[in-house]
Length: 263
Image (cartoon, rainbow, N blue to C red; front, side, top):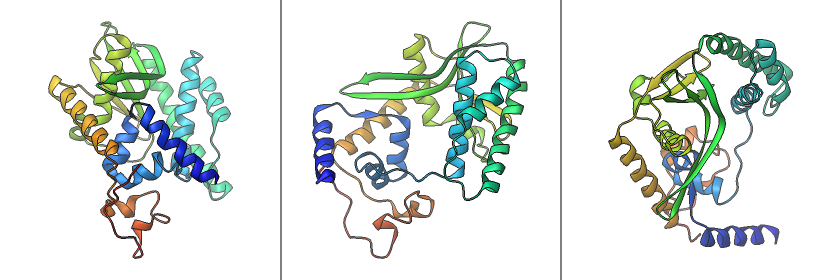
């Protein structure tokens, strides 16, 4: 009975409120529309794992450190220890291994931070504004004011993969965050950067007006499909999906259909 009431309440809210999309939601739909449905309509949660916990811990440590205007490595490591997310680890040895990986990232980070000439003006700053009848929202890890009084958007990445410049130059997340920064700071950022903490490397890019238009068009395209209740499973993504062991479409017993939902 509780599940039925919860489902009804979600449907009622969806009809009453404008659709809100973030980069995470758009990314989930682009990866697999059925995964989007599982996450954001059915309320499924991605099971915790070491990589997720490490990412959350490092992000929270940097947020705490900068909000308190910290300066030293001891302050940063103290914040890290305080916010450590101890979920999804198989044993104490694995926990220690990932904790030390994060500590190494932060030790390298503080050296980079001390060399910066910029001013941190926003940390974990949310943007939310209407795009037509819908809402675009997001959370920017950090915005710096540069010496020339322009802004730089910085997003932290803790995964081991190092992206090519070409991927970063066309990345949708940074485009949407640039739009968000423009709304928050009333100025277009001159630099957009990913800090790959596992590699201690910052990769910087910029965006054109054409890319802004393309990003909004993609936002609207995904929104239209979600509002139409179109959630076809993309079974080619099953091997890389967080729900591969529980989703019906990832097995030979998958129900037939196109994923069309009446939600």
